Length: 440
Image (cartoon, rainbow, N blue to C red; front, side):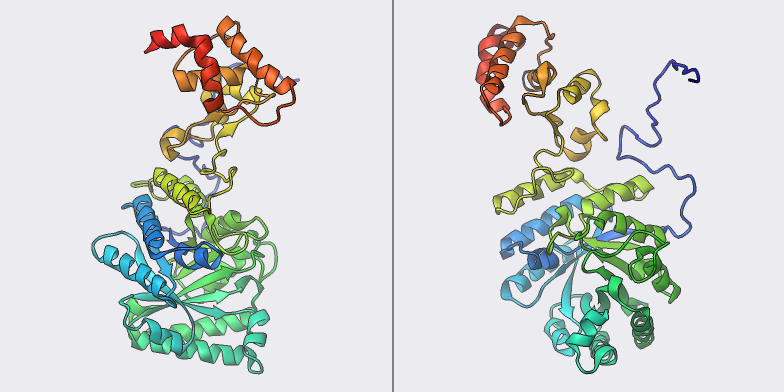
């Protein structure tokens, strides 16, 4: 074995893992197509509801307010889309528009089907932009528009685009099921929309959203269209679209939602559409907090970052609604930063960065935690006592040993559930009462 030299100081790779921010990307070669500027857009009030999140007007506006606090003046979330088909949804939209006109940072937009009839619903609502559902794959066009198929679908969509343009509303075409759609339809359709909008000027320049509706996209450029997200983005850019004209909207059916978002950005897409905390249809939408964590790592939002601590209030709101995030949901789940392993607890006691991916308490406003189980050992107990009572104790401290004996007996008698502080506190108080009193 080659000799291993011990350095005077440990190498923590600070360029990759800065203490003051999220993990950073240290490029060996910066991707050529990486946009100069990127941001995200929200669809909780549309796809979140469509996915089963029940929202009253008040709840919808509370979510919008939290999203605005989260993004602040960072520009991380720039738009949010709303349904318009029911009175409660229109009331949500109107409340959000009022806030936006008063200075809120997220612009409300609408979501409609790409039909002239639906455009008529939004003409007087005061929005500057609307999403328009334009199903793109033969799975849709051949069965929604029988017997006309692709050509009939395109005519219906283009008629709706014309009505939106005449109303002074910027169209955003949602190319549904794009990862199963033929370029023989999408390319001429995109070109037709751009030609139709050209006389209206830059303010009404159309946008296009690539929808990975069934979560079938792949984040690789060495697989064929239509599944390759990078090739799909590059094909759209090749039609003359700028990065800011192009959004990516994926679902998480096959677990690749965040990877596909990052692949889209690397290929030249400027905007990711998703939801805070990933709420959405079936397996959910792109969790914007995860995407933004990585975008910060890529170097975006260097001057002003979103406030990730604000999303704790969103997690609490969802829990109060009976729609809480799973306990092990990354970043914001109840157990996302909780260990039950003694070896991990021992590491946290010795050097807490050992088992923290970044400064979780500072950046997320969430504590690093240990739950006591049959596997958490004395180290877990030491961590909990230090965290809850501010006491430093050694493993051979008889007071600690007494509490540990009680804990061990619990599991030796068949207990399977973890012991949390609420149950442990009176046991510790009896054993540590003099020290605890002296520490106050």
